[in-house]
Length: 456
Image (cartoon, rainbow, N blue to C red; front, side, top):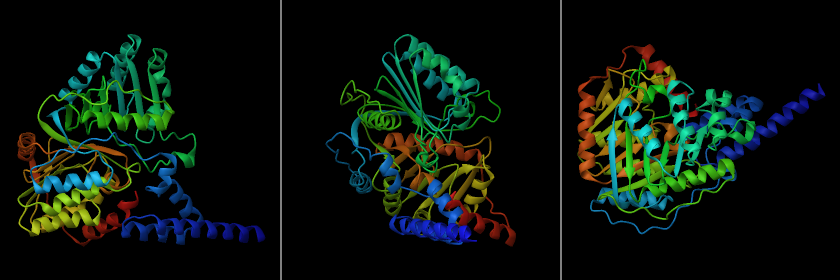
């Protein structure tokens, strides 16, 4: 009996300490209330769950330092919306926009594969790949073979993989033996060897594929068949972009610091800046626990509140927090044309349930909500008026905006924006309007999912 009392006292003290941390750490009210209830009603289990999954920034900073970037002179922007979004990002510790870049976009797995494999083939000095998912399927093995060949020829090859997203690869680590024997290096971000230190809630969702420290490929694609094999059954539609120019260096700095955190190794830069290759003004935007503020979320709020004509959103998982959703709805009330493009069905039922109430609200507000029919649409993009475009790894969901390590690009270049909007028009032509399911049961199911999704 005395042992039970001691255990209960320990659980109570632990719960109180965790609740104190919850109240100290800044987070959305809804999530705060849910975690407080879980920890209070289930003191031992709730506290353990929070220690594993609940920390968002403060704990993480003790493990991974904040990102630091070389000082750069900001580029003045023409539009008020552009400048406002840019200044918010810079205030949050993000590098300023840089002129002299070139970005090209594709939406097919075949073109993405060609870009990636060609870049590997042409690399002369270094290949740095950072991804959320590496799958040891036929595509992954083909990629490893090419990387192994380059490593044997003296090219520096570094592959950084998120453990949680690539659990299958982590369990089958022998698949990397040949690459490592050839001199290539493979590291797993947040390894599971230390359960509490691993912080599996804080996932590295960044997609940074760098070649010779000068060419970047990024977007939504992971290193697996559904993203890169057009012959794969159920191949996905994703947005991949290739960038050259000075802004690539911010991606290089981010990769180098992620690599150093994971391995302790320092990457030497061949150059401090990259020569201009075009006229595009872009801003590389990392977000996550290693950025002091919620940079991506704050930039989106700033842009949405300033929208005057049209907002285009492309995301597979539309599960924003309340302030972002409210900003979208307020834009609609101001007469802004809001268009959401999302897949007919995602790859996870919980996401389908979680996004349903938000999609219903948009429909009721008069927004155009379209479900892409031909395949799973995994692209991530946001366009506000003719002012700015956001592309990259981040979904418009709670996890990408507030928890994950992410990396996106803001483009302030109108021709690129217009070209991307034309591509979205093409996707829209293959989509059907979303019709919220009728009945009280659907409403109850959606509202239950809405409660749970912020902590998943």
